[in-house]
Image (cartoon, rainbow, N blue to C red; front, side, top):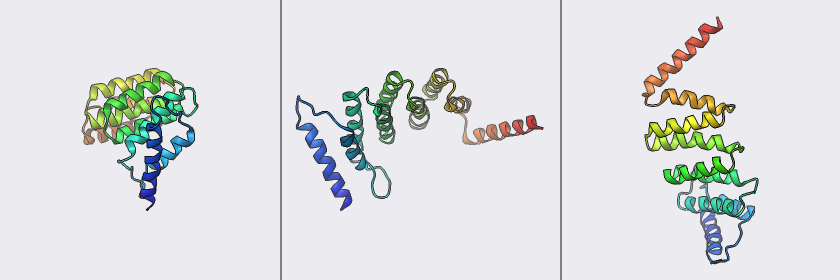
Amino acid sequence: MKKTLKLMAFALLAAGLLACGSKEQKLTIDDVKAAEKTLMNDDWTMNMEVAPQVAETYCKFVEQNPDSPEAPTWLFHAMEINVNLKNPDKCTELCNQLVDKYPQSTWSPRSLMLLGSYVYEEQLNDTAAAHKTYQRLIDEYPNESLSNDAKVLIKCLGLTDEEKLQMILLSQYEEEEEDL
């Protein structure tokens, strides 16, 4: 019943947006939050039926309100949804938009990490693109803790899980030796 009500509420919101025609209604934070409430099922899994519309609502809000302090957050969440939808082109677009328009946002380095690891490495198995993305993170955000993670991930590109484990164990051993 709750699921049906959530779907109906989101459908009404979407219908209202579409009915605006050429005079598009400006979205508010409340509109975005209402759409967001429909994103998760009762068991905390993503509602894949409404996920594309929720991501589009996030993007539309940012388009209409680019100076809003929430804009980087919504772009990142739209990117997360598109990662789950396995839409690499949209993920790349959203990441670039976030880093280019909001470089000082804490979400920008996170979006580069998400793009490199989940989109390029996991979904596309494109180690060259992952390397380039990790390097961009290192170059543009050298003081971020994620930059250190990106350096490690570059070293692990193309390695098997066993080789990665050996590398981690060797690194830990070397650190212990240095401490003695």
